[in-house]
Image (cartoon, rainbow, N blue to C red):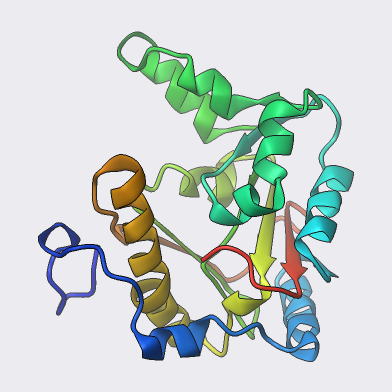
Length: 225
């Protein structure tokens, strides 16, 4: 996921979680009325939106959308891990998962093929870090590798979004990225990989140019960061 201009580099700091203020501001699940209003705003932006009550219902919704035997790339996502979607894609045998295939490839010898496979899958499944009340989606990334397919490379995109990720506006969405999501992801990256994270790339989707290509599943509970 860089840091705001006034902050120290993430590698200079020990892993720290969000402040108490950030937790209070950005971990609360929006009301069902707010979530449904955001679904309407997303539809106006050309993004197909559905609202479900739980992570299990979100998992079932993803299954209902993905065609059997579809080629699928699942982005690294705490949300997908928690609700079982990552496991469904990679281990159920229902789909052609690209992530395990890429793990088995040699980056030195097959780097070009790996880039092509991950850049333009038939389906990509992931999440976002914030969604505004006007229907804009914000996604931060350290490497940017998962952003290209969401923008245009993938044929179809499914995004599972916890109800705590709704923010009033774009500037508040940026605050959520830096003040809440980044500290949590930085902790996770240091523990899992021994390296710091960074908000090095930010994708903002204000409107889908091809209606129906992106589906957002809004969940009436807290999921992921």
